[in-house]
Every structure is written in C-alpha cells, then in structure tokens.
Image (tube, rainbow, N blue to C red; front, side, top):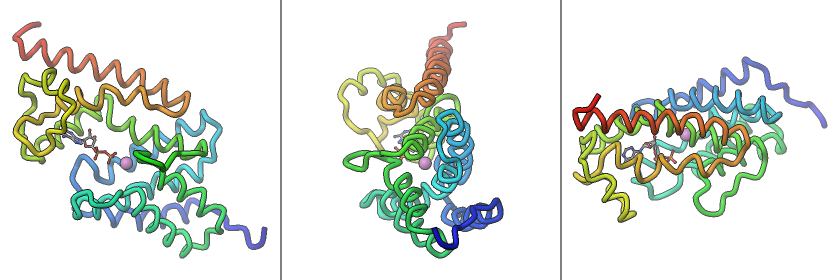
Length: 225
Ligand code: ADP
Ligand code: NI
C-alpha cells in the first residue's frame, strides 16, 4: 500500500473534536456523554473480541453525528445512514484510504440495523452491541427517565405499563408514556439481540441489574420495604 496513514492519538483527537461539534445542544439522553460511554465499552469489548481497536474507536466517535439532523427532521431519515455519509467526508479529508474508510463507515451505517443494514464485521457487531448496551442497565434506565421528562409524557410511571406493553403500540409523546413503559416495551428485550459473545455477557449483567432496579421501584411504589 502506498503512503499508509498512521492513525495516531493526535489524529483521533482531531476527529473527536470535529465529531463533538455535532452534539452542541443535543438532549442529555443522546449527547456526547453517550458517545464517550459507547466508545469506552466498545473498546473494552473489542479487546476481548480481538477486533481492530482503531476502527472501533473511530467508528464509535463518529457513529451518531447524523443524530441531530434526524431529530430536526423528526425521524424522516435514518441517522445511521446520514452519519455514515458525513463520516466518510471527514475521513477522506484526513487522508484515510478507501479500505479504512469503508471499514469504519460500515460500522456507522449498520449500528442501528433496523432493516437491511446488517453489521458484517466484528468491529461493526461490537459497535452495535455497545450502542444498545448503553440503553440498558442503570445508565440506560437513567436515560429513559430523562427522555420521559423531556418528551412531554412527564411520568416516571403510570401503573398501566404491563397492560400498555401488551398492546405493543408506540406511546411516544403521549400522556400514557413513561420511562417504565420504555423498559416494558424495549429495554427488557435488548439482551436478546446481542451480536457478540462479549455483548451477551455484558447484557446479561446489565439486564439483571436493571430488572432488580425495576423490582425495587415497584416495591417502593407499593409502600413495601
Ligand atoms: P437509537 O439510539 O436506536 O436511535 P432511540 O432513539 O430509540 O434509540 O433511544 C435513544 C434513548 O432514548 C434510549 O436510551 C431509549 O431508551 C430512550 N428512549 C427512546 N424512546 C423513549 C421513550 N418513549 N421513553 C423513554 N425513553 C425513551
Ligand atoms: Ni449511539
């Protein structure tokens, strides 16, 4: 390969600085702190999965840069695809060759994996798992409470969660919504969708701590303990 690019700490720091700009004014449940947590977790998991840590680090830093635009357009396009396009430009500007760019962009494009964007490489699978893992556990629940506060539902619970969850409907931005409903509808099942062995282990742990939290929550609501 001709003039091989060296991914130095300084280069990563520069790209991080650029990525951070996309998060100015972002809501607390999806701000730069989410990116930092995903990065740290993905690096820890990537080490265990013997993945390429430079690819993981850069993909994690850039994975949500399309997020704010998606929010502005109320979800009309997918932030993973939008972010992948923006990331490609940033990487090209910094001299990344096509192979490196493609490897990183693949992780970003597939980190949401709703329809046909399937994570194929180990780095993409690790990023996918780390991003989902940040939605569960104690931090994940905290994010859900913050989201509920900002979304207009403003409930920590309604008491109807089990019943509403059975309907399978989406109660986003309605009065019936609550952080606990998010748990009943989505967070509870996240552990079943992990793509790596390490992800499954972390998910098992975070899931049981989150479940415990919710059990204690209902005990306290009922005046027990
Ligand atoms: P993604 O990262 O796949 O775009 P979402 O936009 O669904 O995920 O969620 C981002 C964060 O906001 C997650 O932590 C999620 O639990 C939380 N969240 C999303 N919708 C709700 C809701 N209706 N109530 C509470 N929390 C929510
Ligand atoms: Ni994310």
